[in-house]
Image 1: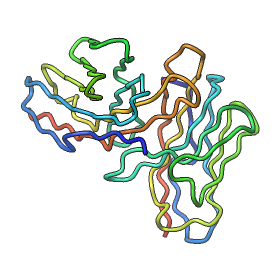
Image 2: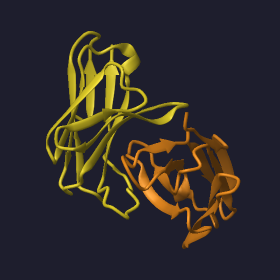
Image 3: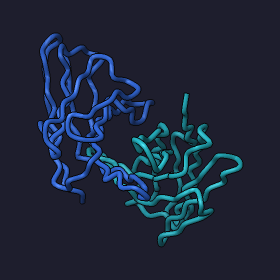
Length: 115
Length: 113
């Protein structure tokens, strides 16, 4: 398995509180991605990073921000959590090498419940 | 925008039978198509992938076929076993730039013993 860990694995929080999820990799891969998974929607991209301090929005980025100060860590922050952000969050990594396939490898996920 | 449609959403088969899951993509520039298996409480795991310069790829009981003209690709599982029960996702991507995936909405496969 690719060396990807996510923390915390489970979190319950209240509406309006800030929440930060962490993704840590030991593969030295350039690309990192945050997805959310909801029934009937599959996996939807929130934000991604293509290098240290280089990030961009995905298809469902409203209400989320990210930061990447080191190659190995990619943080997802919900500035003020809402019940609609209750979901399972997955981090993925990709080496993004020229001529490669850009295959993404996923972490174990974080289940977030916003009450 | 870019879209991947996946069918069926649920599929039940008898143990030993074959299962087929189909996906259709909209972006003709897509050239990489991975398939993931997700077991309950775990992250998606890559099981097979195919590039657009290949029409078919096999790995033991699993195969993927690609029809670029029709813009669809399929996952075939033969001799299904109870441990094949899971949710399967297809995705479409381009092997350049950001390597972003567009995922299908998933198929829940149940293999009945």
